[in-house]
Length: 381
Image (tube, rainbow, N blue to C red; front, side, top):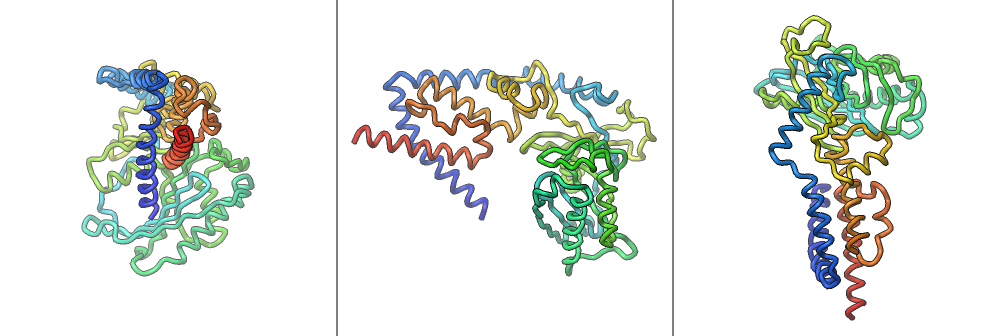
């Protein structure tokens, strides 16, 4: 139903905007402003250009940073974090597995019954749980107790079609999308909270240990088998369905990539080489920066006015959190220099990050188009 609503909204917005565009174009041509609007867009298109030669320069620059990041900690803009994941799914896995995904104001719990290469995903179920605001700034004890209680409640609804292998604990994969200094496949110390969380007594602590203690307090018999971030989880899912998958990319609110590296090609790895000879690397490529990236005046202004100027440049030019804001800045210039929306700049268009998503953008444009239609009708009777 949600997809139908989104599709209907987009189609309606497109229809209204197409009709309004004809009105706007006619009016702007009569005042000589159309050429200016087109010039602004043409300039934007040229500065965003990525011919093959430039793409190769960007790729070469990223390769240099990747090697530097693998050589030493802090030696590159790319962190190239060692994940301790040296084996990925093969598709032969059998049994019942649980997952917990904590990365914002909601968390998800999931269970899946795997049937091996023939059965694959036999059955799966999940639930999404909201975190009360007071727990986001409370204590570590309170937050993880709440998560463990929700997890226990979910486990209690385990029905037909889900079977724990005899003599085995339930196993949990923990996706934790906050900055963590990983110390093993199933442990990692929290570096800092983001996304509105501020719980001081968790910082520096092993988040797997905090969750495990909370599960023990309520008698939930479950073992955290792996701690990963969402990018590595995506790679694992890709490998489960395709044995040739070697990399994963997240293009959402933010952006990141993970890939399979040869263990002996990681100079900063000082442990024993894994039997597989491989190690998954979490690139944290959102922080990549190069003089070869096609930065426009809008990108540079956005970065200067951001909370972290000079950081996450690659993320700021391609990820969902920032693309709407770049569009807003282009529209503002068109409104100011070419009267694109009439004689005044729409007040809401001056609000930073007002265009945070597709539906917000469509709703904004539809409302503006409606005002344009009304003004034209009044003008021409």
